[in-house]
Length: 389
Ligand SMILES: *Cc1c(COP(=O)(O)O)cnc(C)c1O
Image 1 (cartoon, rainbow, N blue to C red):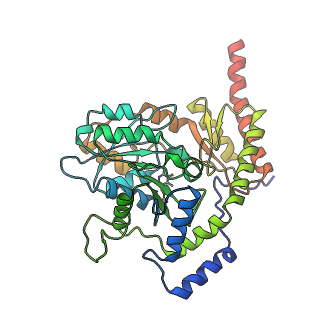
Image 2 (cartoon, helix red, strand yellow):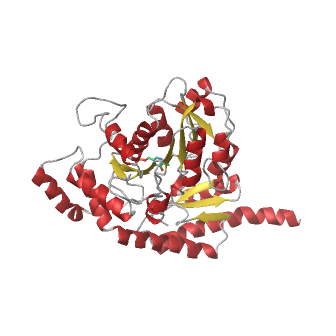
Image 3 (cartoon, helix red, strand yellow):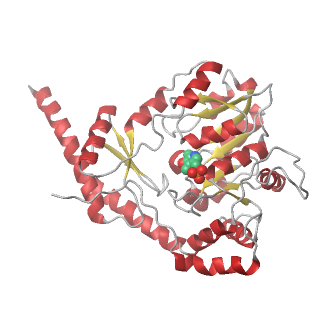
């Protein structure tokens, strides 16, 4: 029997005809990048959608560059007396890449098992805090960390905090009070995220001077001249990417309904099936993901193999954590004591990304869950039979 392949992620961005009118505007004014009118309009409409003052949303050319410019604006590049960044390993590699590009040596800290994020108290008592010039918190899978606790951490530790909440677009839209005046949040507009410009990102910060430094950092460190006055990079979103973003915003209410339908189906169809674990779904996490948290690490291996055998793709979005990836593992071993990260290891062994797309069909969802239920039954029942003997 030939079965259809189900991809783990199938992005759907605005069609050409819905972008066309914006592209015509670009043709008309010949302003292609360097904060043109479409970038201005996108930032303004995003700020309005989050009930933020103008200027509290600043765009970037990617989620990764948004992290970089937020670091440069809030902490600056690493200084010799404070070369370390305390950050989780439970994240996508981009978080550590951005930290390193700003000159910091990542020091990976374990996460809290309930929230999957850094525990501010652990950071406050970390033995390397006095050598840290940056704390990079992460909102994994779109789960926003407790921003008030991070504001307090920044104030008490005297170390700048930046939050990589790359996948948390819906969460900040629904909880704009979480957007801080002191701690910047960064978002990704990558095609795999819920709101996309193809490539792109943004810094959310209710801080006019801070956002001026974000804009300056995104443009080579220039401010009202062509002289680099602070550390910078080219992180500017082009007008073409902004056009995609504006078209995406035009259709975003429909997109949210589509996502709610798919996650609702997952929730309903999972109810009467024993999957050997629990599903994590929006609004707790981003609509870009459906995560199966298996009861055991072995359960995840079985689930993965069974799905792949039926042409259903899965992904461990954060792999085994950043700290074991060859580049970071080698750098960390040379410079810092290696910390055991038991919670990170456990989560990475038990969290499996299942297929998700705004137009995923009920049939594809049922097929995915049926394969999981059957796989769980085949390993659970022999074990139960053995226990009865
Ligand atoms: C997607 C993602 C990024 C990177 O965003 P890009 O837009 O791809 O550069 C960074 N951190 C996390 C946690 C992400 O999920």
